[in-house]
Image (cartoon, rainbow, N blue to C red; front, side, top):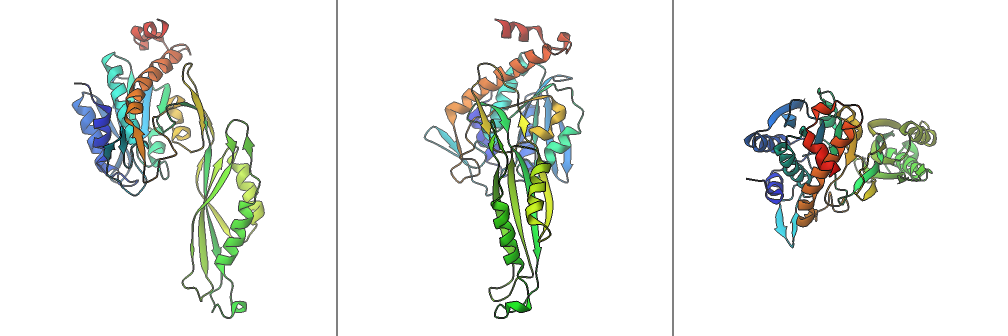
Length: 353
C-alpha cells in the first residue's frame, strides 16, 4: 500500500527530535523503511546519534536527503485548514515524508535511488560531516529545505563567531577602579554592525545577527567577563569577511570561529521555478554525494516559528516534484560519462517521451 505523505509527516512530527535528541526519530524512520524492504545502514555521528542511509540498489546514483533534527521548542503536530502545523512541518519532516514517498515510486521502477537522513543540521552540521566520510556512488544529491517548491540557484553561506571580552570587576559607583567587559563588548558589536559587508548580484546582501549576549553578575558590579554569539550570512569568501571583522575589532575582544559554511551555487532543471535562499544548508558539507540540487515544500518564513506549517496540497505536489527531479538528475548523470548500463533504460524513455 502506498505511503501517505501527510500521515508520514505526522508520524515523524509526533517525535521530539530537537538537535541532540534525534535517536527516537531515526529509529522510527529506520523501522518504516525496513518494513518497506529498503536496505538501511546507520552512519555513526556521536553517542546515541546516527544518520540513516536507505538504499534501493547496490550503488545508488541519486540521493534524496534532508535533516530530521529540529530547533526548539517542540510543538506537537495538528492538521487544520488544509495545513499541517507544528515543529518540523516544513523544516524538515514534511520534506522527509515527501522524499520517502517519491523514493518509493522510484524504487518500484528500479531506479537506483537512496535516502539519506542526517542529524545536527540546525547546529553544527555534524551529521552531514559524518555522512561525507561514508563511501557512496551517488552522482546527484537532491537536498531538502523549505524553498516554496522552487529550485534554489544558490544559498548563502554562514560564519558563526563568539566574541569574548574580559574586564575587571568593581563596584559600579566607582567605575575608575575596574573595567566593564560588557561595555567593551557593546562598543565592539556596534563597530562590527556598522561594517559594510559584501553584496552579490545573485545571492544579495551579507547580513549580520547578534544572536546571544551574556555576561556580568549584577547591575551594581562592573562585569568581569561577557560574550556574544554572532552569525554572518555570507555571499562571498569567508576569509575576507573575517579579516574585515578582525580589523575593526583589533585586540579589544577575543574572536573564536565556531562554524563556517561556504556559499553554494546549485544545479537547476528546466521546467522548475527558481529562487535564491539566504539560509545555510548541509549541501556544501555533502560534497561527496554528487551534483547538488535544493528543493522543498513550505516556506522558510514560517520555519523556526510557533506557527510553522506546510500546505497539504504542496506536500502532495512535492512527492511528484522529487520524483521528477530524481529522474532528471539521473538523466543528466547518464550524459556526463557515467556508464549508461548502470541506469535503468526506462529512465531514458521517460525523459525523452
